[in-house]
Structures are given as C-alpha cells and as structure tokens.
Image 1: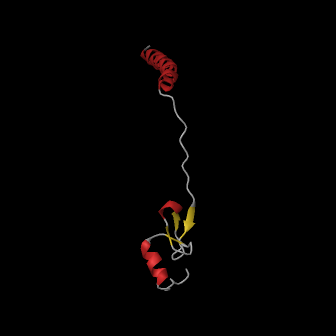
Image 2: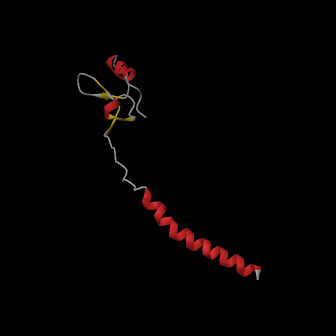
Image 3: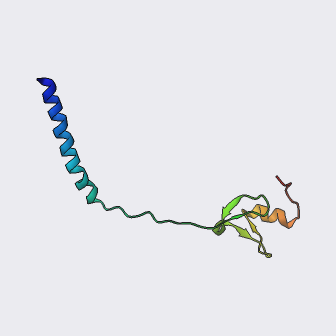
Length: 82
C-alpha cells in the first residue's frame, strides 16, 4: 500500500510541477541576444587576426596588431614566414 501512495505522490507532484513551470517561464520575457560582430583583419607583421577597431594603421594603410609590430615594420625587419 505504501508503494501506491509514493507513486500517487510523485504523479501529483509531477502534475503540479508541469502546471507551474510555464507560469514561471512567462514572468521573465526573454529578449533575443544582440549580435555584435566586428570585422577581423590580419596583422601585416605576424598574421594574427585582431578586431579592426583595435588595430594600429600606418601611413600606407597597412594594419598591425600592436604598436610594437608597427615599429618593427618601420625598421624593415620582417619576421620569417611561418
């Protein structure tokens, strides 16, 4: 008899959970995630891809990942190709 009571208890609990679950979900409306994308460009010196807003550009329009690589390019010392 106790097994039947446990089974009934679980079935009733499951029914209550199913009825309350949609109500809890509707209280907080979900907003779609905003997609923020940015163009990536390769550094002329090392080839690593960096967001264009973070790149350093020289007078010729070449883009570098950092000021150090821009300085290295000014001295015309190229890194060996990988």
